[in-house]
Structures are given as C-alpha cells and as structure tokens.
Image (cartoon, rainbow, N blue to C red; front, side):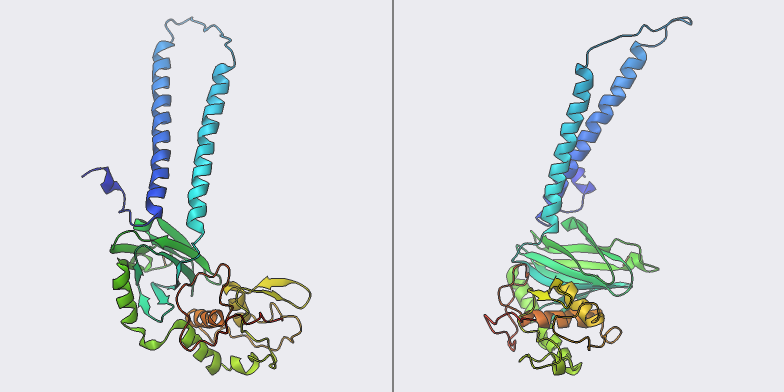
Length: 335
Ligand code: CUA
C-alpha cells in the first residue's frame, strides 16, 4: 500500500496534469506549514520571558526580510495561478476532432447517446486514445458528471448545455458518479465508463445501431412534428430553411445576430418567440412539453447534419448519416 492508493487511477490525459498540480499545491502547503510551525516553536523557546519584570527591547531591522516574505509568496501564488489556469483552459476546451456524445441527466440516471444511434443508461463506452466530448443537459435538477479516474467533473444544468471532454489513456472500467446532491437516490446515480481499444469500440458501436442514428431519428421527428411543413428546404415556407444554418451567424429581426449553435436551436424549439429570424413572422408554436430533452438533441443533431460540412468548432468527426440531405458547399441560408 503506497501513496498511490490515496488517489484514483490515472486513466485520462488530464489526470496526470491535475495530479501534478495537486502534488505541487500539497508540497507548498506542507513546506510552509512546517516552516511556520518550527519558527513559532523555535522563537517561543528562544524569546521566552525569563523573569517577571523583564521588558523586551524593540529592534529595528531593515526591510529585507519584509520584502522577501512578500515577494516569494507572491511568486509562488503566481505559479499556482498560471499553472492552474493552463490546466483549466486545457480541460475546458475540447479538441476539434473530439467524438461527440450526448448525455442527459435525470433523477436518478445518466442517459447517454452516441451519434450513430447507440443509447446507454448509466454506462458509457468510449475508445481510448481519442478525445471524447460530452454535451450534457438535465431533465429536472442540477446533476454533476464525475469520473474520478479521468479527473473531470462538470455540472449538468436543466435548460442549458454544458460540455466536458476527456481522452482515456488505458482500457478499463471506471466509476461514474453524480457529484451534485439531486434528491433521494443521488447516491446511486452513477455507473461505469468502459474505455475500450478503438477496434473493440467500433465493434461495440456497430453492435446495436438498428434504431438509426441520432440525426436520422431527428429527421423522422422533424417530419412527424410537421416542422418540415414550414421549414421548407427551398425557402418557400413560412419559416426559414434550416439547411446550412448550423454554426453560421443568423440575422434576427431588430438587427441583432446570433450564432446557430446547440443552445440557439434548443431555444428556438422550446421558446420560438425569443429570437425571430429577420424577414419572418413569429408564427412558430412552442414545443415545450411536446418533446423530451433526448428528442431536442435528436433535432439538433439533424439540423447539424444538414449544416455546412466544415463548421468551425463543430466537434463531430463521425461520418454524416447515410440519408443525410447535406449538400457540400450549400450556401448558408441568408435569413
Ligand atoms: Cu444526480 Cu446527484
């Protein structure tokens, strides 16, 4: 039993970074705690009162000591700041070529959906050696997606999307927790992340994709909810065409603009009056209560699949679904 047993396994590229920073913080803390404790002890003995009527005589020394004990801690805290910021920014920014996976938290389970269509509950299969980006939301209260072996923890908040990314470094089965108290069964809200060799992952992924990809299911919804009647591809509908819109900047009535990202699409589905595209009437009804968070994600994934091929910041590197209507080089919708 060594010191290593105090820490969870290191199983992601982020884990050693976080641990090294922690070791540094612990070392600095221990060093100064000991230094201060020893100094107090030494001075208490050395300058103890030796007789009842003893008066200490005041000493005036230079500023050297005061400057040193201000400048040295300042330097050390700046090291902590820049080092911590570097680790934080790295942890906050998913690489471009990340695999996109969606997660929905609800009391009390994690639902995970792969773009190719495989769905899991309280289990997440990922390949090693590739960055994975999770886009997450909640159906009810705040949860927190926590994988100690990856040193990642991210709140999952109802009504908005948060992201987390990690790259597993070795195959294995790692605990997944909810790290935000979310009600009676919070403590059992969790499961396992299975990090697999890329080939095993591919096999697993193709093992149960009969339900269709996320984008395909999104397209079916788009038709069954009659979105397609107004959002016509040829721009003749009462609502803007969604072809090529994802990731572009959309002009709104009133002159403002908005980036067509996940959050904007979600808002447009659930609260369509919030932002009206320039040149269109506010005729779209809300789908609040008619679609689940999972279905909103499917619709978003459909809109993304018909978006421009190369979207800066788009995280997916998976092939477009077979029946995607994507037209490479399609001009972004003007409105
Ligand atoms: Cu979900 Cu705690």
